[in-house]
Length: 319
Ligand code: TXA
Ligand code: MG
Image 1 (cartoon, rainbow, N blue to C red):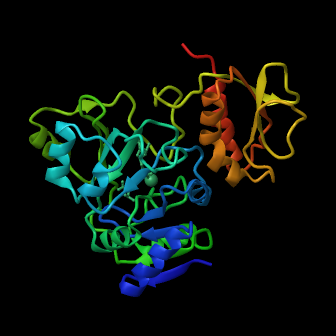
Image 2 (image 1 turned 180 degrees about the vertical axis):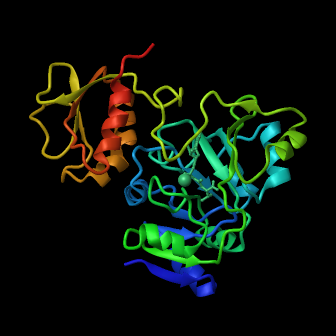
């Protein structure tokens, strides 16, 4: 079952312990309720995607307590510094180049080299992030396809029994998700949200660029939308039922007979474990210098749909 906690000292402490143990905790922010997981724990992140029933792995926003914590995860240019100084804590998310030692799991970043960061302006969120003392990824705490929750009751109606805890901190004040600005180049509006565009443009002293494709966390990412989406250098051969000369193997379940290098997404055939391992295993096989990767068949149910989506993208011919 899902426990409802009061937003007091004991509740916050219990929620932080739950996150440390890999649990899923819904908590209030000023925009909407978020469904939080330890950003560095790939299996917790995989369970989060499963609980939401997301059709695909979209990258998640990492929430931190303050700007100092954000600077440890990503690189801030002048525009990003100006926006953080003006608006954090507050309802704007900045997409920034991640630092090499950024602990956020590859799964939460969908394999990207950038990370979306947010410092929420809510006393309960702030207390939880301070107690946990690490980045917490948190999409809106709703089932995929439903509107975002602004109360603990909304969260329960969508996710009761699918998550560990909800901290009841009353209704979210802003009620729409954060504005997302990419600071990877010219500052670009990826999603309109709780912080009006004009306030951002006033601080920047120039208009925000328009995104080629607006972001929509409830829809599968259009192919090519994330142009820097991780794609291995090696060629992938999907649904392999044997391993050919010169191939390494990405296995799922009992592996095919094979003498060479092999990594297993989940020896026990668990799709949640496989999702947690997908990007890191692809990276590791790529880093080994393999030119060709045979990938065993992954079932399409549950997280398998998203795993197969990512594998199909990684295997697609590149320009
Ligand atoms: O107000 C909010 O932002 C709420 C609260 C809980 O903080 N969170 C939220 O998260 O709305 P979510 O997962 O529903 O939306 C995150 C959006 C998605 O559209 C995703 O594609 C985008 O952020 N995003 C995350 N990382 C990105 C990145 N590196 N590059 C581009 N877009 C990114
Ligand atoms: Mg959402």
